[in-house]
Length: 214
Image 1 (cartoon, one colour):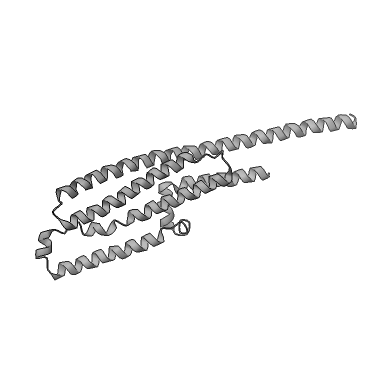
Image 2: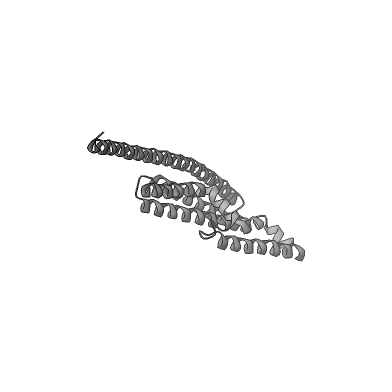
């Protein structure tokens, strides 16, 4: 075999190898994209379910608030619950819109920005949801309770409600983007709300970058 024939065979082999690697990269990209999109679709279904539950809960709370509209503590507590739940519903709607916008075929920078925005919305929705916690210790106080309750009741009430307020403040300040990877319980909550999908998408982006460098 002459040198020219050998070089020609080598070029053909090199071309086939390059096409094979390109095909393999495309297949891996397609598989990774499908996995991420399946996870995104599941999250969209979950968000729609939470939106429905939030609306149903607000209808129930609103009906009860109207029924017991003569009880100031109940009405005030119900209004806080209504506001927090309405905010959560709005947050879930925004999350659905952001999930729908994510396309792994877009530029890496654009996708990373979308994922960061989505994570921030998820965490903010969780934080606001906790703000209603203290009112679950006040909704049962009636006009009769105000007129007849003794010192022991009010001391206990102040301790319980005050404790819940402090706990709510601590949770609100702790549930942040910065703590999403540092504190296990924060990470667990974020993961349940879509954090795993975001992590899977980011992992896919990292792998895509490595494939491009290879």
